Length: 233
Image (cartoon, rainbow, N blue to C red):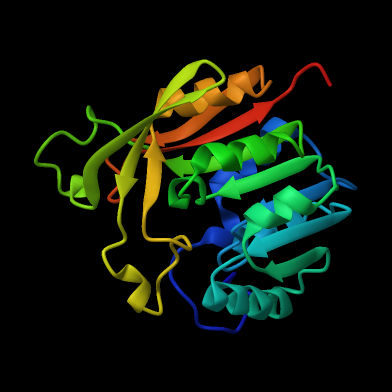
């Protein structure tokens, strides 16, 4: 929690997350804009977005404990413009007719059983998006790297608009039994490769694609930030 809040929480200062600051630098002012946040976790990034005075934030969280933490954070930090929703954001994206100015998907792509479907749905509802995600890399995680242990070795190769995408199957290995679990809704999920993620975004019409915060030695696997925009709008 920020220092001015008299509450004991974790040690990660996500109320001042440099990744969100970078996203806002790339996008520009979000004042009066419509934002969708997928997987707000504990609402600290929501707090940062809310401080920029958007018209509203729809924040959709599937994990019940995380959703409850979001509601607590909303009260403690007086988050005014966010509406937190509990449920699967894929049906939300499939059903809503709202077009958002910015969609923030931090820490969710690598939890998906169908990451390509998620990217496709996001692209149908916005011209600007921010993603922070892990990705699969043989170079960064060679044979013997402990971070490979959760991967089954199974690779599905699928076609996305003429581009061959490799999807690497991974398991949570029972992590959902712990109250600290913050993974996806299904055990069998797929990590994409870095270049495939960027290629898919370009195929979806995002011609302005920027990256930052790339780490290959992150304890859970290689990761990076991506900001993508259709520059013609």
